[in-house]
Every structure is written in C-alpha cells, then in structure tokens.
Amino acid sequence: KAKERGRNTYEFYTPQLTEEAFLRVKMEAEIRMAIEREEFTVYFQPQIDLNTGLVTGAEVLARWLHSERGIVPPVEFIALAEQNGQIIELGEVILRLACRQWRCWSDNGYVLPFIAVNFSARQFEDPRLIERVKAIFAAEAFPAERLEIEITEGHLMKKVEQTSAMLEELKSLGCTVAIDDFGTGYSSLSSLKKLPVNRLKIDRSFVQDLPRDEDDRVIARAIVALSHSLRLDVVAEGIETGDQLLILKEEGCLIGQGYLFCPPLPAATFEKLLLEEGKLETQSLKGSPVSL
Ligand code: C2E
Ligand code: MG
Ligand code: MG
Ligand code: MG
Image 1 (spheres, helix red, strand yellow):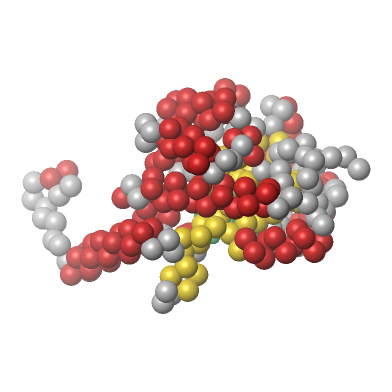
Image 2: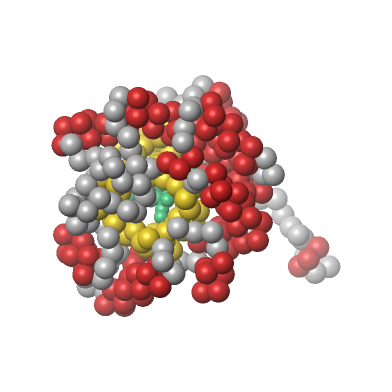
C-alpha cells in the first residue's frame, strides 16, 4: 500500500495501528471460542400485518451472550466476521439455531409462517453455501418454504451475478428472498426486475424522520409504488411511533416491523407473546396474510 502512494513516502506502523490489529486478532479468537462454546443465540422480531395487527412472521437477529460483556449486538461482531470470513461458519450457526427453534414451535403447534434470516454477501462467495443450507434443513427437519433470506441492497449489488444465481437456487428449494435496507444501495431498476426477489424492506432511515421529513415520505411512497409495479411485497422496518405507522399505511405499506409493535425478543419471550395474545397468523405464508 505504501508503494501505491509514491516513492518517497513511508508507512509507519504506529502503536495505534498495532493495537488495532491486536484487538482484531483478539476478537477473532473470541468469536472462534464463542462459536465452540455456543454463546451465540437468536432473537426474534415479529413482522406485523398493519391492518390486522397479527404476526405474519419474524426476523431472526443474532446476539452474542458474552460471559462478561452481557448481550453483545451484531454491530460489534458481524462486520469483523464478514471481513475475516468467520461469517460463513457463524451464518451456519445462526441458520441452524433459527431453523431448530422454528421446528420446536411447530412441534408445539405454533407454525410461524416464516422466519427471515440475514445473510451476508460473503456467504454467497462460498461455493458450498447451498449444500450447507440444505444440510441444515435436513438435519432440523425444516421446510425450505418457511425461510426468507434477507440480503442488503448494498451486499446484493456488490456481486450481483454470482449472488443472484445462488439466490435462484435457494428459491428453487422454496425459500423466498427479501432485499434489506432498500433505498440505501444502488440497484438499477433493470437489475431489480431480473433479480430473484420477493420483497423489499424499506430502510429504517426513511421511516425514522416521519412525519416531519416530507422527502422521506415521498421516498417511502416511491418504494411502495415500485414494489407494486414489480409485484413484490413491501415491508417497512424501524416503525417506532403511531404517526409513522399511520403514514406508512396511507402510503400503501401492508407489513411492518419495529419497536412500536415489539423489539427483538429471545425465543422464550417471543413464544409467550404468541401464546398469551394469540397473535399468530397461522394460515398465511409470507406476505399473503389471511384476509379477515
Ligand atoms: P437489519 O437486518 O436491518 O435488522 C434490523 C435492525 O433494526 C435490528 O438491529 C433491529 O433490532 C433493529 N430495529 C428493529 N426495530 C427497530 C426500531 O423500531 N427502531 C430502531 N432504531 N431499530 C430497530 P440489530 O439486531 O442490532 O441488527 C443490526 C444489523 O446487524 C441487522 O440489520 C443486520 O444487518 C445485521 N445482523 C443481525 N443479525 C445478523 C445475522 O444473523 N447475520 C448477518 N449477516 N447479519 C446480521
Ligand atoms: Mg434484516
Ligand atoms: Mg434492515
Ligand atoms: Mg431524513
């Protein structure tokens, strides 16, 4: 790298850089141990039918139950795991946990219409991804059509050809695909038309400043219109207030997710919510909620 900057420059390895590198290596080792010790777990956040208030499915969100630091959120380990490739193994752990929990609920009579699991671009660089996913489905007796794969718009566009070929394969197994954080990346309309995608998730950044920010409302409206014309489902993420909900409903959004309804919950708490309130929409599959 120093060379690229010209002949007469030097790159100094400052103590700060060394410390950074040290912390990275330390974290890598910690993640490795955490996988072995099964310290990772999955939380579930419901996706709500905005008209009926029923749970249509749930997004799966990774958490690290650290012996000293407590519950560590994904911002603190996913990016590093993506950089060093650990996300391939971690992604497998998360998918397995999610499928196992779905199966457990299902055996107890709670058939969650779908679980949405986040996948990183890096996982699609693994030629064995499909094989790994299939093996997990088989081991956990999980029906593929209950899995929605979430991939961020930015990740998807990074390696659009390779990734969409694999998504195509996953779709042929029965999985569905959602583009996460939609509106923040740079998908062209023509690539969007060709991609094997079922739904768009309106990024939280377009929701959080509603109703104050009129531009965001226009963006939300445009994404809903786009999804309708491409015959995709649309979900709004990060709904925190009643005002936001009202506007998104006015703009034609049918499904939403956010603290207004429910934060991500550990499986046992999520289950209680389903049991106590009878909120589960058991008949529907992904985005086609039962009309009442
Ligand atoms: P994401 O997939 O866009 O997930 C939504 C994030 O928004 C979650 O943060 C969720 O807790 C949060 N959220 C939900 N409702 C609200 C709300 O009303 N207000 C606000 N302010 N936030 C809300 P979380 O769990 O910290 O995850 C952050 C990101 O980490 C995720 O964004 C996703 O990109 C990544 N991530 C999480 N779990 C996994 C995983 O298993 N694999 C991969 N590859 N990435 C993951
Ligand atoms: Mg997501
Ligand atoms: Mg998102
Ligand atoms: Mg704004």
